[in-house]
Length: 384
Image: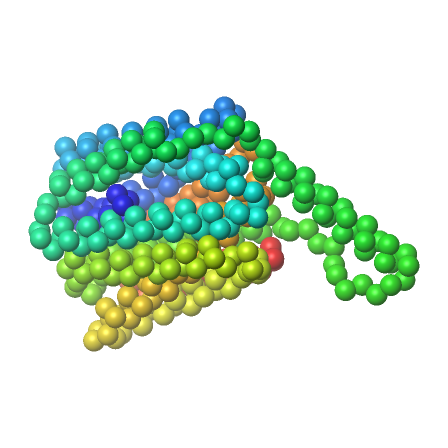
C-alpha cells in the first residue's frame, strides 16, 4: 500500500519541491544502481545463513524510519540521498521473499503461489493508489502522506513478526535442478535409442538458454523504466491533469495487474513458456499506442486508462513467469540475481526516460520504449 502511493507521489513531490524531470531521473537511476550490489548481497547472505525472516524485518524497520525522515527535509538533494538509502534497504526483503516461496512450495506450485503473492501485493498497491487519490482530492499535504506510508511499513513489520516463519529444511531448488538434469539425460537417451533403432524422430534435444532469458529480463526492465519513470509527469504536465486524476489513471493500471495475477494463479499450470515472448511484444505494442494519447486530446484520459489497464495485466503475467523461471535457473547463493538484472535495466531506463522526455518530448520516449520491448521479445523468443 505504501509503495503504491509513493510510486506516483514521489515524482510529483520532486516537481513540487522545485526539481525537474532530470532530478527524477537521477534519483531513480542512483537508487536502482545501488539496488544491483545490494540485491546480490541480500540474496547471498540470506542463503548463506539460511535465515530469511530477519532480512524482511530489517527492510520494513528501515523503511519505517526513513519515510519519517522524509518529512523533515525540503531539499531535493537530500531527498535523493534518502531515496537512494531507502532503495538499498527496501530490496532487502525481495530475495528472501522469493526464496521463502520457492522453498515452502513444490515446483509445480511456484507459478500459482507467486501469482497469489503478487496478486495480494497488487491489491495493496491498488489500495495505496486509492488512498493517494483521496488524499489529493481533499488537499492533504505531503507530510501526512509520508507519515501514512511510514505507518503502513510499521504495520508490515508487526505482521511479519507474527506471520512469517523460516522453512525447517531448504532443499526444493536443489531438487528442481537435479530433476532437470535427470529429465534432460533421459530425453537424450530416448533420442539416441531411436536413432540406433532407425525410428523416426519427432522431438529435439535442446537446453534452455539462460543468457537469452537474463538479457530479455534486463531489456524488459529497461523499457519499462523508460516508459514509467516520467509517466506521472506526462499526465500531470502534458495532459494537464490534477494529481487526483493521475492517481486515478494509475489505479486502472493496478486493477489490470490484480486481474492478471489472479487469472495467472488459476491458469499458469496450463500455459507454455513461449507465452512470455507474446506478453512482451504485446506490452511493446501498447507503448507504441501511448503515442496516440498526445494526438487525441478529447479521448486522451480514457485511452491512457485503457492502455494502462492492459499494461498492468501483461506485466502481471510476465512477472509471475519470470520469477518462477529465475528461481529455477539461478543457483543457491544468487537469489538476488533477478533483482540485479531488473535493477540494471531499471537504472538505465530511469535516467534515459526523463532525459528523453525533457530533451526530445514524450513521443520519442514512448517510441524508444516500444523498440526496446521488441528487442526483449527477440531474446525471450531465443530462450523459449
